[in-house]
Image 1 (cartoon, rainbow, N blue to C red):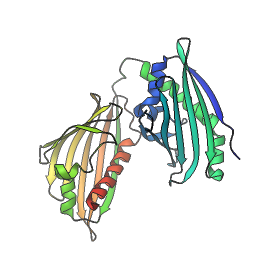
Image 2 (cartoon, rainbow, N blue to C red):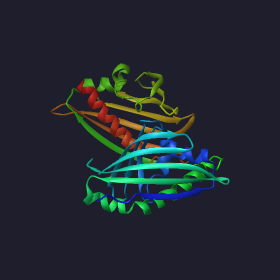
Image 3 (spheres, rainbow, N blue to C red):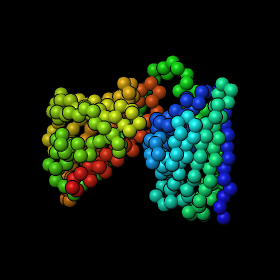
Image 4 (tube, rainbow, N blue to C red):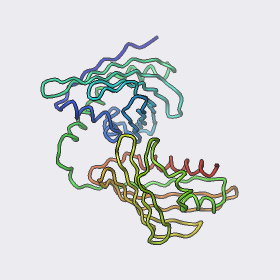
Length: 307
């Protein structure tokens, strides 16, 4: 049985350009996509035909649901069509949602109309999720309204600091010397320490020694410029790296972090333990993205060692 399409409309007291902006950038989408109580540790949005709409929603109990979508149509400030493929935390496909979003002037504000139709792949699991979609979307649009108000407020938010700490560990079937080179040699590190697909490197250099600096600046496909700027405090070959770094997006410093990398030989190769303490600045909501991004980089290191 095919579920009936979902139709929703919501009016926002904001110009169409501002409402469209909230849909078109991952840093905005991460703040509002999903009902209240659901975190979004990852959001990759490239608003172009064929571009990704990739979202990870994490429930309070830690269960994750991935939406791997793609933009089929993009008419700036007027209409977008997204084909969303929703999967379980284990990666099993659950259902597909064909989503049409249109933006209309309404007085001094904007009306957003949403039409979503579904194809169930795993009806047992997906049917209750689709049945709850109307309420989920209403809650989601409440969050969108708050995000639009935040973006349109104008003045900078109050100065705040939010702290986060995580530790990750991976084992690699490679000698410690090769892993050390992947962490400290510019050419070797360039194979795995990169931005998202479509990223254009603007600047890259590194000098791994006590007091040495490393800097990577890139421009994403949506035009956002990001910078990683680090200084090394402790360098013990094939054993330990301790460094501090700041992250800057479009000229705004969003975080400052202290990171430690520890290498330990194992019977089959080498283990890498990464511990990071971050200070997220002035309203920047990390929502677990730094940890998930670091986990992705650790997998990329493994792939580079296997080449």
